[in-house]
Image 1 (cartoon, rainbow, N blue to C red):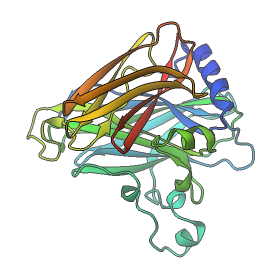
Image 2 (cartoon, one colour):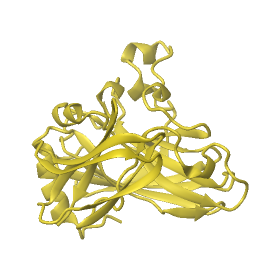
Image 3 (cartoon, rainbow, N blue to C red):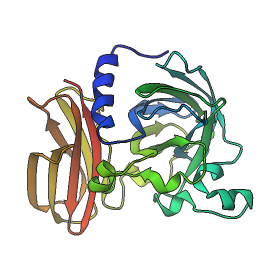
Length: 304
């Protein structure tokens, strides 16, 4: 069921994003913080379709980064646009090739870019490629709510970073992938493909996963803030593989510096930063962490 309690805030959010020409965006991901093996893992994605689709009713596609052993069982989608039908989410028979490959590569059935070459994943994780069962026409400012269900019976226990990529099923959409690794690219490029990574879930029961020991990353990592969207307060987890000087900062979409924190000789390990929006206006804010010559950032949605 479409949730309309935040519709006004979503409309405001859509207007803000449209100023930056972002074609589609994963606005929100809802998933449990923990589950037991054997239970159904359900995630709900709210996708903002900023640009209208009036000529070609492309199918929507979703790539989900999930633990090995999990099996996709069912999915549905609904839209706030009354002209857009609801429908089901099914397995992509092309396993993402149509939107990852060029037209020539796809028609020749030749190899093309592997997602793993662009987004590094932990051992024991895999991509599942899904799509809508129908293509849609819709106006701008439409929202699609997608519900996905996975059977976890054949999984293992541990902590896993779930990830999502969304786009439309047409040729060569991967070059437009917004990974959130560069703030300038994210804000100034017309993006037709969006990603939302590192949604952490704790799986209990059964055998223990060896792939992510104790669920702690082993490389410099920045996780998505939680909750997101947030009101007043949110938390951001990050991991440092070594002692280092780091810089944590928050900027508005127009580049205004909101908060700046420098930590010298910051200990290695998993840390949590608490951010309070205070008197800020409703909108999207960019949280950035810099360590030596590395930088990562995430988008945070503040609903006042």
